[in-house]
Length: 144
Image (tube, rainbow, N blue to C red; front, side, top):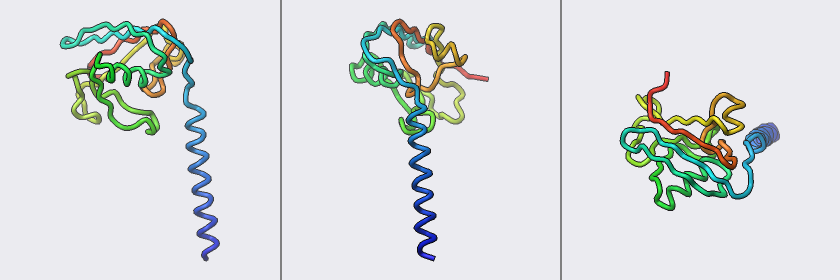
């Protein structure tokens, strides 16, 4: 009986390791180096455009930089290790109080990011890779 439990636990551990490894390998890889990124925030209370020079690989890393340098106040929900990464809960004082019910959430688009154009939508902040010259437009609205 004891050997069966050891086999079961070993199979479970191996399965979890394979799952996590696959998730890591399938995660889009960012482009190394210096990039100029434009962030356009379309909201009545914010209405701001930022032109940023960064080495960040993902939108999540860029938001962390902007938060640390106090150019924006960013609120995330969840964690980087979640299946879709962190959710963008708030920019400055515009925050989704209930991420599961809304009624409004932050969404973003890009007409010149290769992955956004290819997929027809932009990925979550921790998976959305950055390319030099990208322009991202953020809006706070209800989605249907």
